[in-house]
Amino acid sequence: MKNVYILGTIHGTHEINQNYGFYHILEEVKRYKPDLLCVEIRAQDMAEANSYLRTFYPPEMVLLKEEYENRIPVYGFDWRGKAMENLRIGESAAGLPDIFSLMQKDIHVKELILQRKARMKPFFETCTLKSCQLEYSSYYSKIQFLEEQLEEYLKLHDFQELVNFNAERERRIQHNIKRLIENYPAERIMIVTGISHKEKIEDFLAGYYFPEMPI
Image 1 (tube, rainbow, N blue to C red):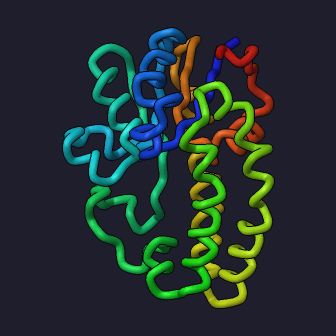
Image 2: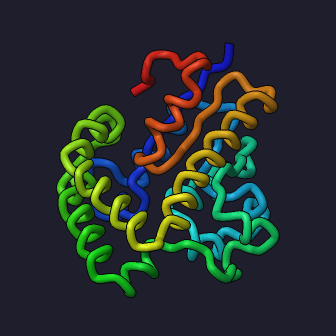
């Protein structure tokens, strides 16, 4: 039976969170000793130079790729849209849904995003590696109403494409990870993903064996 460990991260906030910084991620990988490391980067971008990828991906994902790609297999599982499938990550795709671009065009979307960010900020800036894994869901549930408001607003104002894109990205990430687990002959697999994806991936992979949380 394969041993799969999913580690949730907080992207750029690792730079300012002294309790859960880049060092803690590296130490956790070192402690777990995976045979296969999977990161939130598109598979087709894994051959790109790390200096190039730093502009487009979360810093901890590129850091892990750089640190381990010459020691163990490191694979990517992200998906950024069908229009981007044959393009480098830095190349633009016309019409690609983007919540951050939409923020500049719609003041209500901007307000909801900023409220969500402000309410999550205390957690992200102070959590430890362990508390991030164990307490994120309960903390996030306190702002679930903002997520529901945002999704409802997007649907009502002809932004359904963005809602669909986000749902499809989650689905693609889950299936890409499942494929890696099934096809790679490794016993200890570590998946590093943004904390917002972690629980959804775990639910999707519920049929797999997940040992006691190794933290």
